[in-house]
Structures are given as structure tokens and as C-alpha cells.
Image (cartoon, rainbow, N blue to C red):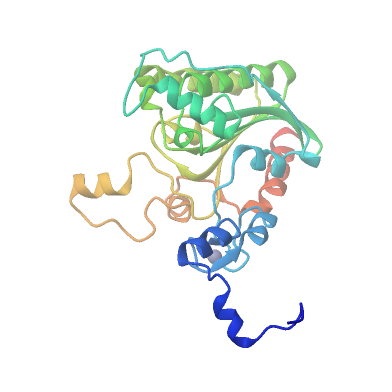
Length: 285
Ligand SMILES: [Zn+2]
């Protein structure tokens, strides 16, 4: 039998991939769009900053990708990378908080749920803090609070605008009241930024909820959201159960909030940088 000839019947003898193996081999190459439910080649999605090329739905992106998108030439300097939570409550739920932090730090290569960075946006030096949604749900604890507080100080010292990109489930329960105190601490800092006549632009992405919405995410001189983002304080299920009423269509999504005067704009991800550049030129001259 020649090397190149193969009888039709031989195919039967080739090992057939089981359903499970087939799934394993294609896993990671394709992704189902949450918007149109179509299967999209992952590279196509990533090449479009995770905006579905078919329906325009915005999938979540991490902090590094976000900063690459916003900063000129994707160049930026990180600050406060060594800040770590001290686990002030010695908290244990299904596992010790310390352990949870270590796992997250390993998985994301970050110290906590935020990257504080400095660089240029449309040629203008700015401070941008981007939250990492994968890090314990992008929750806000003492480290996120301190990073923002320090970014505010840098903004004031260097006469620069501050931008915060939120992607968060809210205050981090493993730090209890310490997390809640960050709301007041950051709000006070933002007031000092205001007194220094420097703009703060808040960018709300999917999801922005809980204590983050209840503090800095809604305190921007401009509050700008990505399309279709879930933005709210309590989740829709909790509200529905509490008031025992059916919630309207699109409740707590960006477009709904814009319609009801809670946001200044809804801007697609691919137009965000240009929009922010224009806003900063308008606000700072
Ligand atoms: Zn889609």
C-alpha cells in the first residue's frame, strides 16, 4: 500500500474524536456573542476591542486592554503597583481572603482590581484608573480606594485631568466597612480635584454597580457609559423582589439611564477615545 493511497474504508479505522475532545480542541477559538448569540471567531472579536462585528454588542475587556485603547500609542506608566490589601478583618468565607487575593494576583498579574496609569490621551497628559473586572468581580476595597486617592493627588500636583473606568460589582465585602469608607475617601478627594478646577471624567462599563455607582462612578463632571452596560446600585432581581413589581424593559442599562437623566452620554467603545479627547479640549481649553 502506497503512503498516499487510502481506501475509503480506512477512515473508519482512524481514531474518531469524541464530542468532548472536539470541544476541547475548538475551545478558546470561538466565542458566543451575548448580544446576537452568533458564534464569532475570537480573533475577530479581539481585533475589534471585543465589540461584536455583527451586532455591536460590547463584551467586557480587562484593564490592560482598556488602557491600551485609551492611551496614545498604548504607552503608559503604571503607579502604585506594589499596593496590597492587608486583610484588615482576617476575613474567611468559602476560603480565606488572603488565599483568594493570592489566587487572583496570580491569575491577573495585578495586585488588586485596578491599574492606575499616567500617559497621554489625544496628546494631553492625563491620569487614568481602569478597574479589572476579573479581579474578585472588580470589587472596590482599600487598595482600589488608595490608588484612586493617589491618582487624584497626582492630578492636582501635575494639573491634569482624571479619568476612571469603572467595571465593578461594588464594594468588596471581604473588607467590610473598610471598603465602604473608600466611598467617602474618594468622594472627598474628588471634591479637592474640583476645587483645583480639574475635570474628572467617569466612564461606566458593564457592570458598574453597588458602592462604585454610589460614589465615584456617578460623580464625574461627565458620566459617560458604554452601550448596553448594566449600571445600578442594587441588582434588578433584588429590586423586583422588594417592590414586587415587574421592571421596565432595558431597566438599569446605559440607554435607559441616559433617557432618564442619569448619564451625560452613551458612547461606543471604538469612539470613546475621540469623545474623551474632545471633552477634555472643551473642559480644559
Ligand atoms: Zn453579536
